[in-house]
View 1 (tube, one colour):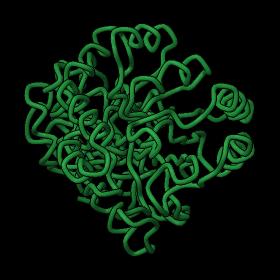
View 2 (cartoon, helix red, strand yellow):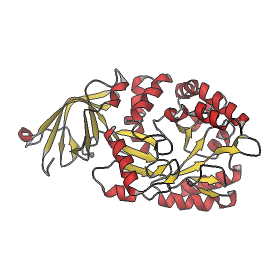
View 3 (cartoon, one colour):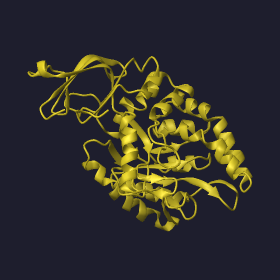
Length: 363
């Protein structure tokens, strides 16, 4: 659309889970519900509209081997955009992707800096690998580099036990989270196991990624503290294959991963039923492809979340949690249009009819 062009969205605009409008206008790249004076010259798009989807756990600038070049990062971002993902919380990347912020045609990114992991306790080339005495300093560094988030690796395989073990002593985590909060950043952590969760929550963490180790003992703690989870169920689906590959060397770990996988849906549903905030994230950019947010929303419904709750996990609720606007008066026009009502069948998210980013039709 040229500068000064007007877009008229006509149909059903899902402003919120309980608020539906019949139309909106895009003028100067911004949303308005007031008919503009130049309405007669508007380009009209019809369908069911949602705020641009959110992938709350994604990695732009990263693949299975570590950092990637800008051309690969661009392809990743475009793949997400074309799937309707217009807001990404980048949950750790070793690449500098700030140049994406200058591209009007690429999704908005909220960065968590680079992963912070224990020495030799994470995927090679991904993280700062450090010891506990340095945790506070590295958290402060990434808090200043990120966009209000810091990412820790909370547990990983311990070769001395052959199973998942927590990475950080309680005191180091408490001091690090306090420093992040002092600097205005929230903290999240990769966690698969059961025993790593309570110390992190009691230390004041804001979110847990994957959270497969939640139990009836820790779920109430999450609910009481308001700690969110991003289950990344499309990633958890790979656990059996990972277990098969590592069983010869780490049989205890392999058995543990299979058990976590087997109860994944029950875990997420129990957390949701208890009032734990649940958001949609794919973990794309490591070994997983980008553009999978629609599949993740379907997975949330398979876990037992109602359709509207699963939609909120990637739209209204997710944007509010991340402090970004949806389809409100004057907000940037970042929206996705579908052929039919996604509240009736969330699978429609896999087939966007139109993608509008910053007021421009980009897909």
